[in-house]
Length: 121
Image (cartoon, rainbow, N blue to C red):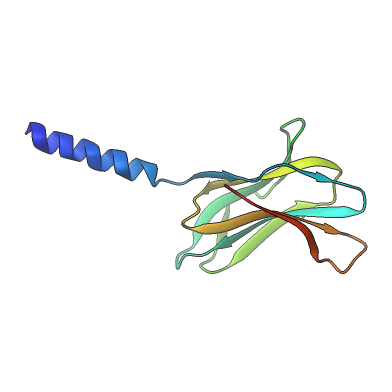
């Protein structure tokens, strides 16, 4: 009985480390005439429930919030804004085994190519 209880405890300890958590990017300074997006790609074969947030790196205030969303299998979603200051992205209830997530910054006056990309961890 004691062995089976210890075995169950060990399994639960390992399982809890694989549960989803939030992924967060480093902060990036966004200048004038620039835009920023929080981008997420679901790399699994099943829909993924999540939330994407763009957050002020100075105040910690949520600037853009997707609200609860479902990203289809193999699909992507992004949310962003043209804003000045230090910002970062939070991808709620996700894991690196299920998504690829990043903050991308770009010039509003150029061709829209990304000028900064930073991966979420």
